[in-house]
Length: 508
Image (cartoon, rainbow, N blue to C red; front, side, top):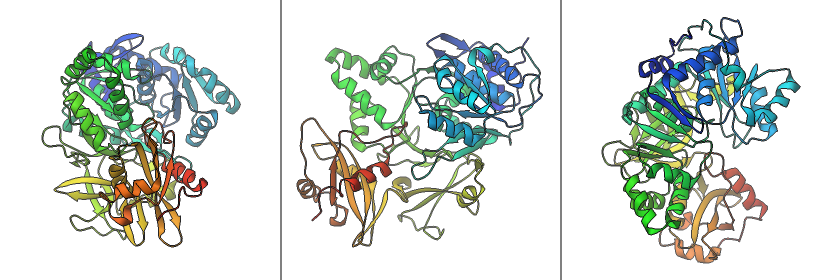
């Protein structure tokens, strides 16, 4: 008989849920007991007679589904540190994550074998298939202290190579508990997962919160708008979490449907108890359109790899469009100026966060870890302002806060205004270095259909919404904005495109 006991809170709680359905994937339905048994087998296979992996890193590339969770839990139960690898990554990126984390073992399913097996062979790293680890024999498993390292997730790396963000088991537990309390997760919940499983959004907010609560997580290998709409329409789903680009795609699919199907989809959507948007700024126009379709005011929240979630609009109560609400339970947040001083109410400042959910370190980078904190507070690099008691994100301090002609302006504020233009489908605003102004406000836009737009007409139109120093003086029309796996626009890439195009059209 395989041991189902564990001192890890997430795993220990699963024992209470027994025969409830934990995961549904393309292979079928799996109970919490199935998950406990499978993860115990994985742990035994990884240990291979040893008592403890002692924080060895185990990198894995597995299609989202029951096996993914079993491998993650199995690594934890063996005393290892999980390093989830992103699907569809080029070999060079996989090699970087594996080499940087100094992974001692690679685990992969059949679709990932051709990607990982050669990397393992070149480095002499132990490589195990999902079939091998899931066939492990029962073994005594170690007790794992909450202070032990549990997971390394790699950040986007917009200005340098990605850094490995290390979370302990205690950090992960705190992140989960905060959201379970704030969003009132229960065993009656059912959620659909289609988000990447190498980010906090999918791993913590969806999968881990669901399994902590005894809920059911339906895991899809990839996102497809019509498939997701079909699942919502069939009933049973109670929560939904996505990034803004997903909502845009769902809106497009709804618009393309017949009137009868639209009515059925909207009716089904209205039955969900909560719909959340995060990982990127949500345009107010998208929020309003989604409310027209679904009846839901999307709950916006704020977080990042290093802190989990920190701010959230309320589950019950008014949700302010364009804001990210207030601090979550057991999370401390403050806004500070350039010298670390607390800013006055109504004044923009950098977000700093403190609490048990904040990460432990950047893997192998003590200097970067030290520089990321100020007197125990994590410096997020994001700028916000408190308006009427709630936080509104103004953008990344070094990317979205432009300094032009002595003025500090928010790129996100300008983007929100430009989206109101009838020809603009999407846009991103960046600062371009300028010897006279410090930075020029530059906009990259994606247009609707066959519409056309030039800088002079855009500036003339925008004067009704923006102060003169906020008007774009550079314009570049693109077929699509460069984005990362979570749907965030990659602003350094946009800035490079604008500069390569000689700054677009000259300003006035």
